[in-house]
Amino acid sequence: MLKRMKWLCGIVLAITFALWLVVPVFAVTTITEYSAGITFNAGPNFITAGPDGNLWFTEEIGNRIGKITPAGVVTEYSAGITSGPYPTGITSGPDGNLWFTEQAMTSSRIGKITPAGVVTEYSAGISSGSQPFGITSGPDGNLWFTEPSANKIGKITPAGVVTEYITSGATPMGITSGPDGNLWFTEIDGNQIGKITPAGVVTEYSAGITLSSSPMGITSGPDGNLWFTEYEGNQIGKITPAGVVTEYSAGITINAQPVNITSGPDGNLWFTEYGGNQIGKITPAGVVTEYSSGITSSATLTGITSGPDGNLWFTENSGNRIGKITGFMPSPTISGTPSTTATVGTAYSFTPTATYTTSFSITGTLPPGLSFSTSTGAITGTPTNAGTYSNIQITANNSSGSASLTAFSITVASSGSGSGSPITAPVGGLGMTLLTTLAIAGYGYWKSRK
Image (cartoon, rainbow, N blue to C red):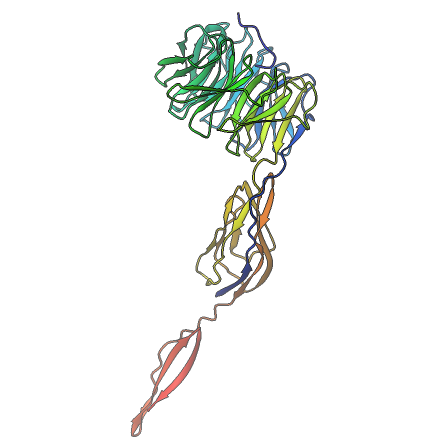
C-alpha cells in the first residue's frame, strides 16, 4: 500500500499623438502569501490555472476545492465532495471545468468541479484502492491520471467513462502532456520516467536517472523537453522525447526535496522545495536560483503553476497559505502610430504593438462611437459626434509594471459634406453661360466660363 505523504497530495478625425516606448526591465522577484478565506488546517496541496481566470487548488485535509482570484480573494467549495477523500491533483479540463483526484484509499475517485462550484464525482471503472494522484488534460480531449497503488494510468472522458492501463508496478505519480502528443509520467518507486500514447502503449525510461532518486513532479518545458523533480535525489531531471536524460543538482540546497515543477512565463522551469522551504528556478541550460524571502518558515511547499495573470502561484501545505511569485517578467512595452484621420460613417481602428502584456487600460474619454479593448488595446468603431476629446492614454500592464503611449487628443469634425449637384444655367442672348459646381473638401464654388 502506498504511504500517503502530506506534501504529495495583458467627418475628419485629426489625431495628435506622441509615443513613449519603455525598454524591457526585469523587476525583482517578490513573493506574497495569502491565508484569508482558507479554512484552518486545510492543507492546500496542488494548484492549477482555471478557465475562468482564477487559480484553483485542492485542500487535502479540509476536503475542499479552493479558488483564489489574482487579487487574492479565496472561495472554498465542499458541497458534493464525499467525506474524507483527500483531494490531491487538479487540472483544467477540455470541457471548461476543473478535474481533480481523490487519493484516499477508501475513495479512489475522480472529481469534476465547474467554475460555479458544482461538483460531480466518478468512481466507476477505477480500481478500488488505487489512490488516484496526478491528473492532466491529454492531447486527445480526455483527462489522464495516475493510480499509484494500482500501478496504472487512468483515462477519463469528459462524460466520465474510465479506461485503465497497466504499468510495470513502479508507482506512477506525476503526469503531464508532452510536446510529442503523448502523456509522460514519473514512477517514484520504479525510479523511471514513463510515456503512454493516447492509444495506451507504455514505454519506460530509466537510463541516466540516479538510483533511488524518486522522480515526482513532471511538466513540459519551453525547450521541447520534459522536466521532472527527483525528491530523494535532490535534483532536477530533463528527458527528451527520445528518452535521453540529463540531471542537474548544482545550486540546489542539500535536502531541498524538489516536489512539483511547472513552466514559468519567463521561459524557465520553476519548482517547489518541500524540505528546503524555497522556490527554485532552473533555466533550460540548467542554471538554478532559489528564492526564500517572503515565504513563512516551515510552510511545506507543494504545488506550483503559472497563473493567467503572468505570475507563478504555489501552495503551502503546512503553512495553510497560497503563495504568489511576481516580478520575474520583463516590464511591458507598447508602441504604435494611430491613424490620424477618419470620416464619419467610416470605420476607424488602431491597435498598439505590445510585449509582455497581460492587460490594457485607457484613461480619458473616447469620442462617441469608438470603443476600447482591454485585451488587445485596440480602439475601434465609427465616430458619430463632433468635438475634441483630450488626454486619451493607452497603457499596457503586467505584474512587473506598465508602459503607456503619451496622452493624445482626438478631434472629430462634422462632415460638412456638400458635394453638390450640377446646375444648368439658363440659355439666352448671344451667348451661353455654363455654371459648374465643383466639390472641394465639402465646400462648393462657382466658376463662370464664356
